[in-house]
Length: 483
Ligand SMILES: *Cc1c(COP(=O)(O)O)cnc(C)c1O
Image 1: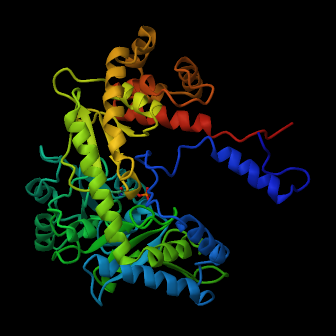
Image 2: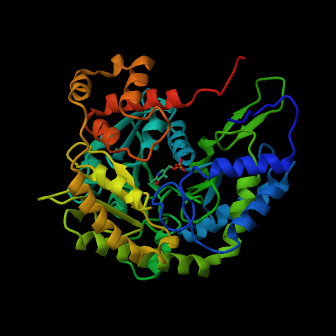
């Protein structure tokens, strides 16, 4: 393993070749066979362009826009483009953040700080809302009211209405939800929030840069943006369907008064007066310049074309699922997600299926059972999938056949018995170390995950959190500290 701080500095060529070697163990970010984490438009030259733009601004600091007006100009341009795409007008304002999670934390912060009179401000979300809302509530000490979704996996407007109380500072919904890719009834919820005088955030982190184009292409999707009265803020991640490199999201507010409590200002120390619109103070111009370059190179017509390719890929993949015995579509493939579940009769073990798909080069995202929802497999579909989509059906059929032949992951009975007795408080580093060894994870090979996923799937959420926290903590150990 290489050292980050060798005794003597090394030549650049050597370092770059070592980094390239390291990267070869990663999942492929190009090729249209990875359905989570990365978003690929498969456009020649785009990586190089974004990288060059990144390099120009990497050392520029977003801390002070008067010192670096280039960043201010680029941020205003990005926010303007997002506002135009999402039904904004001349009143619309926004901020560039480092990602969807930060955008959501700031939407919750702005709402919380707009009501300093409340002892316990509250946030109302549907159960399918992104986990980042729970993180925001936790960090900001805002109480979280989670409302079950309807049988169609969409937020239930009347149940949401019933959850709004005098201490509710924000209501949120998704366009679309990450897990299933369905759009919540935004207009209905917006009307309810407006009537109650409560802010309403539309989390379009995932789909905000593709939904407008899908709608232009004729997809049957409802309005979800500022065109809907009562929507007070919207988040959209540029590092998702705008295809920018990681580290850029936008949080839009309908007007400046709504944004103002998002800022943090502090003059009570001997240094510079700190005025921050976002969580970070010092921040690199690199991701912002790369996003600007990406948007300007693809252009509006380019995004429309990418959305058309995405739409085509979604329909090919969805047809493959429908045509394959043993699996079924779990949610309507109305946006850019294909979500599949085991068939109701004669179904296949989904965790084994995910491994079999991976063995055939298709990297999907297993989702654990939750409340009354079964385990599912999630596919985030991007434009890069269009050329390979027709290869999916035969591989899915073969993977299902292989998964049937293999049967469900067989966990050693003593392990299952021990797991059934576990409570989150009992999860120690020693226990995690033993479990990791027992499940074959000790060597750092994560290609066959069915046993691990099956175990996690039967663990209650609090235990699952404790196990995965322990496991991540086990992985995140510094390489050699002392001789
Ligand atoms: C990805 C996502 C987020 C969180 O975004 P990060 O960039 O991963 O922090 C929030 N909401 C939705 C719907 C998302 O898909």
